[in-house]
Amino acid sequence: MPELPEVETVCRGLEPVMKSKIIDKVLLRRKNLRIPFPKNMAGRLEGRKISHLSRRAKYILIHVAADAHNEEDVLVVHLGMSGQMTIVKNGAGYKPLKHDHMVISLKGGGVVVLNDARRFGMVLLEKVSGLGGHQAFQHLGPEPLESSFTGNVLHHRLCGKKANIKTALLDQRVVAGIGNIYASEALFEAGISPLASAGDVGAKKIDALVTSIKNVLTCAIKAGGSTLKDYKQADGSLGYFQHSFAVYDREGDACPRCVKNGKKNHTIHKIVQSARATYYCPHCQK
DNA sequence: AGTGTCGCCTGAATGC
DNA sequence: TGCATTCAGGCGACAC
Image (cartoon, rainbow, N blue to C red; front, side, top):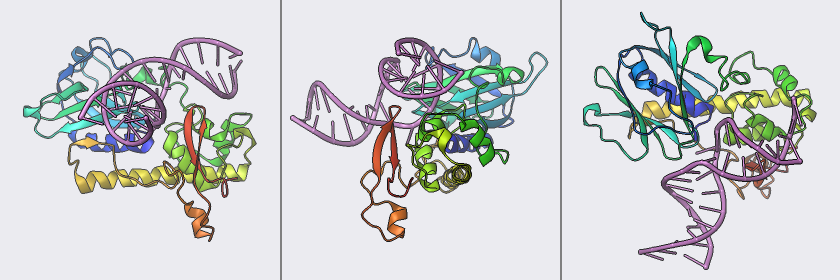
């Protein structure tokens, strides 16, 4: 499920386990995910210290500190559709499960595993200085939770676009980190039809949309954070938390906003746009 | 250049 | 119960 909030939650869950630890062993249990694992990945990482973790768009960035022989590197993990990072509780007793593809053992006993059944994920290892120029990063749009991401900014980025606004929100070059769920959720909250041409939506509605994007993402991160805190990763896996959505996967349900306005008979519809499911209320999203 | 469709994989849910 | 079909939250390659 990983969109921006889930990836953020994974980063926050991993940080206390990985930060300031020395990488002891990196085990790759196959050659590739969607793309090959980086050349000599284990050799380039083992013995080095993790300085901190961060996130850009839907990418987890594990920063590896510079040392006598290397400048700072970044181990980049993208979870694709089905990827999961797991903190193994009893590292010494770790037995690989099906689809465990990458196992990072830390000095002191911590073990972190990347499991990805569908293998749509990817792992990169890049110098931090070259990261911004890497093809995965160079065209990424702004981070939606930065204060510099405003209605004005989004309005400019959508200007002239003929594609429907739902599809445009999924374009990582327009804005980074929004996936299929939160695109539907944000448009619903802002009361904007997913069918509208992106370039035709007025400035005022785009302002509302930016507010809604920030709101749905922030609420989801909050839900993820409380999962970390409350459940303490019952199974050690990170990022897949229970969260209820207003419209996503609610085809046929009563529209919550219309119900609030006393109109009980308006329901959530499901349509397909650019081969992806979209959920919305035709009555209150114009 | 901008836009829409397809396929990469496996597993879960559904239908017969 | 078993087997086939459909669908999934990402993203890049490709065709137009």
